[in-house]
Amino acid sequence: MKTDTYTIPYLPETGGYTYCLEELELAFPNEQLEEITERYNNGAHVAQIAHEIKRDPDEVFLALFHQGRHGKINKMAKSTLMVPGKKLGGKS
Image (cartoon, rainbow, N blue to C red; front, side, top):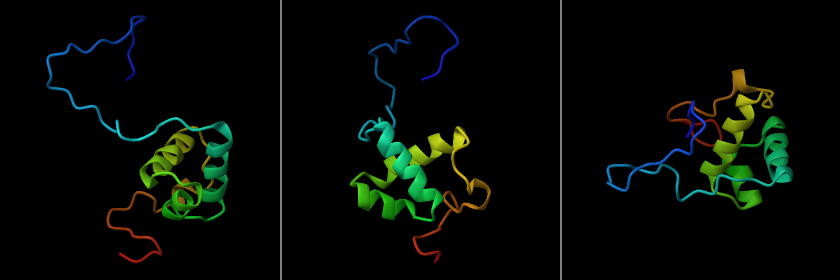
């Protein structure tokens, strides 16, 4: 959650909120984040990386999304990471 104030955000316990991604582990050891980035930049697919490092593919995707926002993904412009219907191996 990003806020423009200096106070801790507080959501009242009235319901009506959905906490997205709460079933995922969003923290990565620095070494693992670097490994994910290096493997992806060397041509590995998200599913392949996830299997090899034993993480949920969604967690790997989010790690790459984070790294992309910080300019650490070399092939972002050519990536098909977020192409709808794209499946592992390039077949739709």
